[in-house]
Length: 261
Image 1 (cartoon, rainbow, N blue to C red):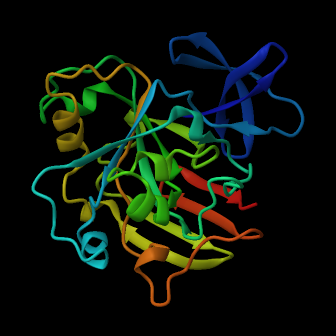
Image 2: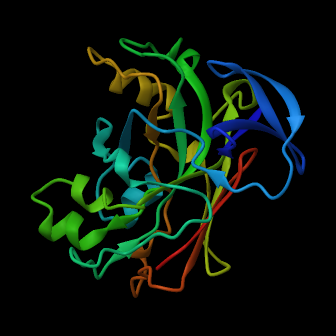
């Protein structure tokens, strides 16, 4: 099932997408059935309001290589402010006061947990997954590498720096999250084009590692890392600028597009 979130008559509501048709979602707790058609043009919201956002650094082999870093022995975890969540079609706004000269795109597969998760095993890890969506882990590389106090959270947590969407595809429709094609385009040019099978730590391992003696609440979003081709790894570097448009596309999920201001 493909779920979208939109502003209905009583506030944010869920709907169901089938082809190019949109329907109200009837039910509770993500146990939905198709209701009446949604009339008019639908403006998507981010498909979830995360309780927390966990990021994974350097989790693709070729991305680690382009970053001149060895493949990590364990997953590199950072946290991204939930206030950074952005909606499909809405602008990524570059900071005006905490100015960055090196804003970068990172197309990623996002995993959404559907129930509290603690002590998952690789065998049952995917049982905690509600679904999957596209993400752009926008990163200010100068704040990440020079000004952030030896951590990454600040560089990745500015307002609008976490677009999610366009839909949440329920876990039953994606049997293997590490067998997907992921692509990022910048102003129509393909800049990332790879497969999630290049992850150093697959989705099962990430959930297992992150939940060890740690409760991950329902609606935790895990950003699983980005493939090679980021702006920082190019020669010369390719930084985002006002007027750009970034699109992240993942098989079976769709395309998440955001302009840059």
